Image (cartoon, rainbow, N blue to C red; front, side):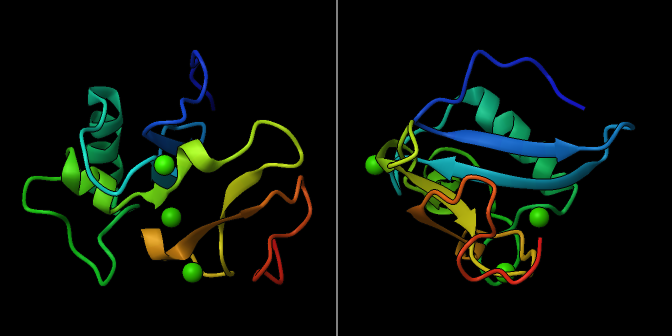
Length: 123
Ligand SMILES: [Ca+2]
Ligand SMILES: [Ca+2]
Ligand SMILES: [Ca+2]
């Protein structure tokens, strides 16, 4: 299932993978800075993701006010505006086989373009 989008921004985003019934299967919050504001659409999507228990703070739990502004940025995967737009650029990837629903589960690194990510042993 997909929704149209004008394109990924290099600021903050909430990316969700949903099944045909709209159930959130996986998600990631990304940002360009560890502090600051986040777009309202990113925060609204983050609230839906949090309600589905698909994103938490490292160690568990949700920020008291939700993933909003500084709390969004502090718990998002960095660094969206340091990634690339071609094969030579960095990407953001999960670091291992477990889905922990938090920013520590992801890292910035070289793009793998369909190959398995560094740290993963299976898709
Ligand atoms: Ca997940
Ligand atoms: Ca940045
Ligand atoms: Ca993991």
